[in-house]
Each structure stands twice: as structure tokens, then as C-alpha cells.
Amino acid sequence: MNNDNLLCARIEALKLTANSDSIKQAITGFVVVGQLDIAQLKLHAYFLRKKLQVEGITLKTSHSQELVACKHGFSNWQAAIVGLKS
Image (cartoon, rainbow, N blue to C red):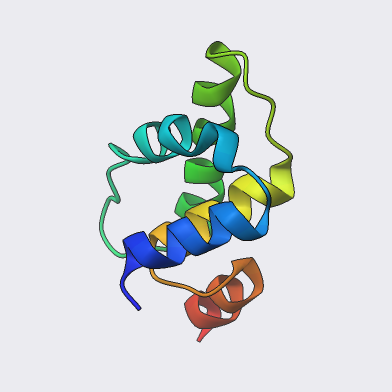
């Protein structure tokens, strides 16, 4: 499953389909500097929440983390943390 499919599936699983287009637009544009690490993943999740807040969309921290993990090719946040630690 590619990253976009993972992201779409996670949006549906989190019942965020009403904001799907805004989420997809807000999650793009983050530039990874060097190799992806946990700090950058957390920063991307933070920026996603802030971008959506500007549009009046409130997103839980855990939801933004799950979405960002999927955007970077991980099945969920925990898999991203484990994958980046190794």
C-alpha cells in the first residue's frame, strides 16, 4: 500500500473524512531535512495541527501523529516510532 493509500485509510479509520481534502492539503509541503527521525515526525504532526487550526479544524494530537506516520509510509504512529528507533 502506498503512502497516499495509507493516509486515506487512516483518515477514514479516524472518521475524519469530512475534512479529508483539508488534511491532504495541510499535510503536504513538510520538508524532511536529512534522514527522517522522530523529532521531525513530531514536528510534522505539530505543523499539521497548526495548519488545520487556521482553517478552524481541531485535530487531536494523536490523530495528527497517526496521519503523519501514514504519510511517511508507516502503518501507524507506534510503527513509526519503532521503525525510526532501529
